[in-house]
Length: 470
Length: 169
Image (tube, one colour):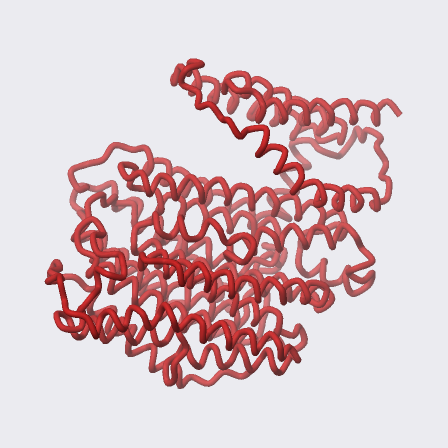
């Protein structure tokens, strides 16, 4: 029973995706019906995940599945974040498609498939299963980015993402081969045992394999020096998809990265120094790119790189003995709330064909739409890390955990980077509040996105009170 | 001994085929040299006594998938004038080699550290349909099952990207 409960969210998401795929083939389900079904299925999967009470880590159906899945509180919370991201992205998509052309009925089905791949990714405890999960997620996201084939920007984005994603996937496979050569197995459990008996650095194939696999994950997480694709791909994708990619994909990738590093403390210790520099460069490269942007989507994409940098700080600071992942998951949740909030707001404010996307388009928004402007300000302040928002608490936990692990310089650089990032977050707030409006910001009525935005804004404050044990 | 020589022969052929794939200007030539890679990979599987994988590699990859790729290239009817001229081709290739070579050097050193294995052909109880099937459905059930989700996603994605758009769009 416990086994079934543990994989139930996965089953619910997968079955929901197939259900939507079938529904899309019927004449009687049209755009509105499919949208409501998509939102509803994400909400259902979220509550299933919430209802699953599993404490401690164990491998569901370990006899049949050979321990290739492993669940723990960490994977459960990561799953909750992923499904919540899916839910709010679906709400944003509903608003987006009332104003934009090019809706395909399979849109929500692909989102659910992507979520299914992400849940598998967080639970995978074996390298080949992990690769298949990674590809399920990636293929669904490629299709979501490029579904509108009339637009050149979408095609460019999907081509770049597909090529580079395939490249990273090839490195991952190569890494798996090396790890198999070093450990004679691809299962995390066996790799842990092998490292415990022979040591990590005295086993060259394992080192090489871990190097290539980290390479692939850092690419997916948009860490320096593999960050160059992010800005173009996020800019080219439709707004709700960008929000989904920035939050859910990031959550899944960081969850799997933490799982991989937690195979053994020796493995993590060998890469801590490199991750340290990657974290620093990721934060500052992201900040420099973000400061230079005039387009809101590109700015959010670049700030996503910066947030990846903070999350790598959390990876540097985790300790295999007492791993809970609390700081990382809290930060991911806080970041997801703020980012999805902005994307939900943008998806109805951007208007037809994504007209309003640059900073200047949002001049004087506070005069015309005070509530939307207030919500966006809350999200931006949360991303910048101003108390009492969730973003502040997230940064606080990450920097505190870095101090605890003895990486004082990294903690200080994190604070410096977050001060730098205020520049581009506050810039939008200034434009919204202290400029005269030039636009009337007319939007389509009868969408759920404004409601979703307000719920997210409340959540930004609500979850900041949730205590995390470091 | 002969097995080792054959391995080097197949390895060389597969690398040459892969080089041809990226260096030939016309996609048809590229596809044909890719066939060389696929067939030499099948040869390597045979050297490893993986009978079923050898057959699948030949029938599915070198056969079915390659003929699909060739059909598509023929449908598109690509002429020499349709091909883009790539002025920086050799420059980028050289740059790529410079960037990748330290990593390749590192990986080669790691491969060298591996203990030498037995390269003899195993005749019984390995690599046949029965053995692979048992392995697949006993030990590798989960990857086998989730590959079906992967294929379904690929199918839906292909329909979304290439399918006909209805009145809803």
